[in-house]
Length: 112
Length: 117
Image (tube, rainbow over all chains, first blue to last red; front, side, top):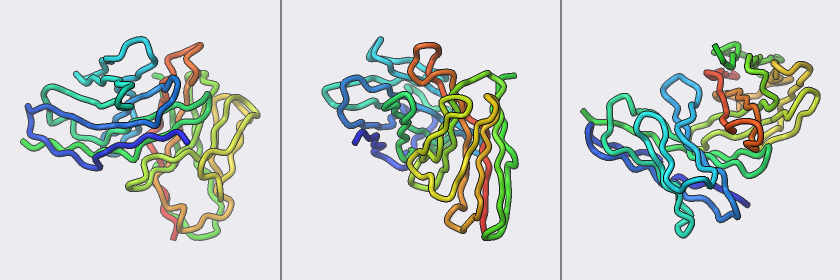
């Protein structure tokens, strides 16, 4: 079965330092992968998406992710964390026109 | 403003008392879906609808019903709620998950926190 695995349930970084949130997917011919962010008491918002046009994808708020087929990974990064980045992040896969698979989420905390 | 609206946002009820969580979108989206979010489990799909009068089960449909009589509305019905349905529920919509006619982006409501005693 197709799946998405977020390797860390909680990541804590200092403000101004890089962020790395890890996501691996089960192999597929052509996965559609997304990162969504959920701020406290809010719905999810799209950060970025991979749809095979380019392996390095840029999203909103300075986030980007790189699709690596050889590693079946789609890690989310940001060069410098900001306090407003504190939220929960979900790696998401569309496996068909109707089937959507969410990772279990990574909670990002930012230390002042 | 483009949005997905859920009501109620918070609800405490008792076992067996039927309730409906409404979801409405103003973007003329064809695809709508319901999810429940539980700690450590991410979001799990309950039901989805590809268009009016077309609904199908997701991963955790037991204890839930839906209907799609109009394009903009997709209510979630709990006929006889039980404590294991205590959760945070999200409705989402999208123009097209296949990217043929849109970005594939899912637009989410702000969530409905349900407690069943």
